[in-house]
Length: 292
Ligand SMILES: Nc1ncnc2c1ncn2[C@@H]1O[C@H](COP(=O)(O)OP(=O)(O)OP(=O)(O)O)[C@@H](O)[C@H]1O
Image (tube, rainbow, N blue to C red):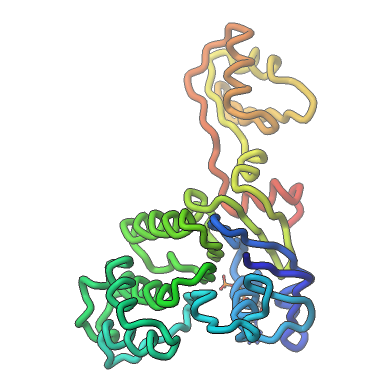
């Protein structure tokens, strides 16, 4: 399990991370979300022992990175800066990292097969596309078969096919019982793969919980030729109904099935019923009650 407790980091006057606490459990993909500059990379770098916290702790399996025996067998990481020697082939690169981590040579071909990097094993790393590079980074992270993965914006630069592959891959890895923490500033990129979300803004926690909670706050859009009657039928505590058009309402505080059930009870025809997919910004606004 990946655990962050009361974690803070200041760079001079900049408070990058502020009293942050959350965990990423085994067997789950946890999305670490926040706008640019929110403190995601700094938090991940503290987890990986690359930045020293000003206060608090960041642990993997109960230990700080620096105290982990054979760290690459405990946690695999993909950071934007994870470099490859440009003249090395993919195969050479993985062999070097396997040797450094004390992992058996047989792992090299295993991780190449797992990530699809086997298809370009002989290519020099400087000639790789972004998508290929991501696969090599993931292969490197998996050399030690770690129970935890910390991936900073792993979908960055991937095309839709690459993103779809990554989703399936991360789901499989989590299904094997690993704790996976992935950062992103795009909710749609991670909502289909993550079970849990941790949202931060300006270094502070906004919310942590199941990804489905985000939709609790999301609105439902409904089109009906009897919109005014529907609006009256939906009236209730905690429900906000806003007319978008003469025949379109945006409803907050009810789920799509609840809106459909209310319409059915009153014999009101519906022509369209859509659960809005919140953008990260929208979810932030809903969750923070509109405070930005
Ligand atoms: N080494 C550093 N020195 C000074 N300030 C830093 C340093 N690293 C990060 N910061 C600052 O800390 C804050 C958080 O940055 P961080 O890179 O952790 O955010 P992020 O959520 O990963 O953003 P992004 O999505 O843009 O990658 C920013 O204000 C950034 O400018």
